[in-house]
Image (cartoon, rainbow, N blue to C red; front, side, top):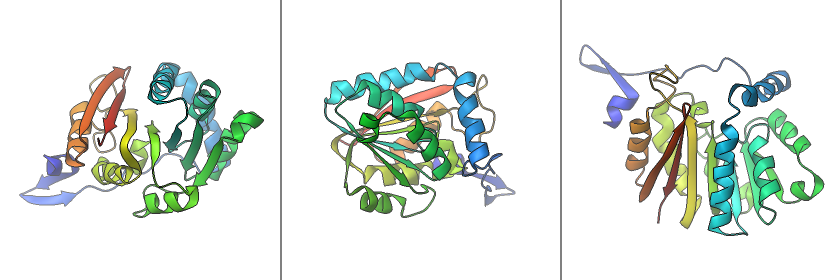
Length: 227
């Protein structure tokens, strides 16, 4: 099944599909700002999912370490830090421009609880570099929100999830939210996965428990644990 997800067959020969190029360069400050200005206008219901993360974090423990992968312009960081006053937040993104936008949203007390790390989760050793720079081996809560597709092809999803596992302990919670491939959602099945394909990727990565939370207008949310 994994091979069906990531490859196609041409006359019986398995052919690896090329990466899907990004239409914008999120490292570019102008492109980053344009994306940040549009994202909540296009999908204001994102904040319903943000509220779900806050609820889950507070239920998990008042004092937790949170890691956001592909943290972007900081909307989620701001929401979580302002609602969870005792957490420590690590934002990981490949764009310094996005980090600057994120920092500009936070007040002093929130900045004191936040750490910004620049790195690319498309690189094979990204998790090792993140541990070294954050000086943390594991995190209590890990979130990737609308960024999994920035792997630029769904065939990388399983390896990415396996790398995330190395940042988790037995009680860690991993939340994954991304656009899905569906008739009423995204149409590029190289970049986006169906709900079943997401579940298959988690299964191949050998997570112990996986829960499909909801599909909110084309954004699917999953809760995953190793213990």
